[in-house]
Image (cartoon, rainbow, N blue to C red; front, side):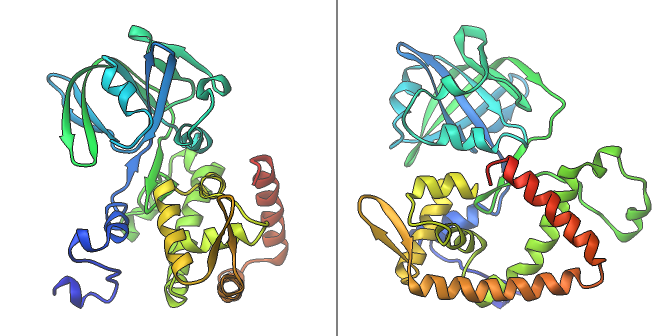
Length: 317
């Protein structure tokens, strides 16, 4: 069977014909999320990156890449040392913080200096203190090779980035017979339970998004814009926990479809067409939720909803 015969095919072909779709395909490969940081003449600087990769154990080499258009590219080209901070599952806000431009990024977070003054963030899953050993041309990116001089690994789960949004790593359920094995006590904590429930529900609801001709990211952008009088692309990315590229791609498609419109200076608003589309998605969501919760006690559902609302409110959601 060829790719064209697969009914689940979203898009494919020559990458140069549709860079947005090509980027979405690359996003099917899940990665971790890092903040790469270094020290310069004017102080510490950093960027959020998900291009981190192990290269070699002997010698201990890693790589990461940065867009040539990044405001930090000149600083990293001059730096001889850098640290790769692998973010923990609880650090989505920190990922967005260092992804945005402007301001003193280190004033609002806890950190310390490592070898050669490289910034090490607190609460991460791991960090690697590196000497830069090479730079390579990577098209619209520069690829940096670092030799790890010191590392630290912590007892925290890492943050995942996949399909244009942040995610959590959870154990695969495996074969049905495997499900009889007693789980680790951590599996009964809220985070893994929420992650597994979200993966189940989001996966099952994806066919409804497809029926309306939108992606999950586009639906989330519409839902966010419907709650206010407009927002910038940067604000949308920060509040929806979607990557900036994912938001830009979603906005481009929504604007082309007449569902979102730009408003000066730099704001984006949902249109009547967008509200109608969101209304159809919401109707599908209500029916979907009613179906999935039909066999659960109403009082349990109500209690769960109250707990989730309280947790969301504490996180600013």
